[in-house]
Image 1 (spheres, helix red, strand yellow):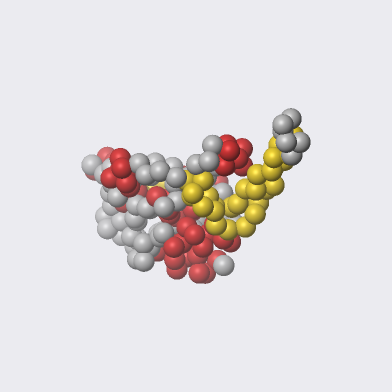
Image 2 (cartoon, rainbow, N blue to C red):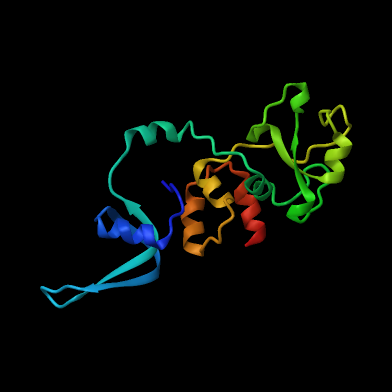
Length: 184
């Protein structure tokens, strides 16, 4: 199960502590260490693009299904492909905003299932009303991303082998499958 992005320094630490169970993907780095005084050999650690660590945290496994990623605008805009879910146009991030489908003033929550990406014009037009009250069509149903989807949505540059690994952990019904097929 994908857990998080880590830098190569943390990956090297996991390799050194013998916590890596197996690796997948491509070789990203070959890190050269010091020379052992006893053997005269230099240490080398190869860091792959995907590493699996040893151990099983039962608490993590229990919480995995109940995991709700933190809501933030960059991940929201990426979830919705920088598309205003009211007018259907694609915008630059600076021209987007978070819209509450059921406005907070009407009891709506600031949660993944109640927010969509909207351009500033549509968000201002909708104001404190629901889409029905504003006579605006919502083009897609908002959803809470799974942990694997959220890792993708964090906006990092994802290598092809990492993307294949992440997509294998997306739910079959994930709208991201279709969106990723369109982009690459």
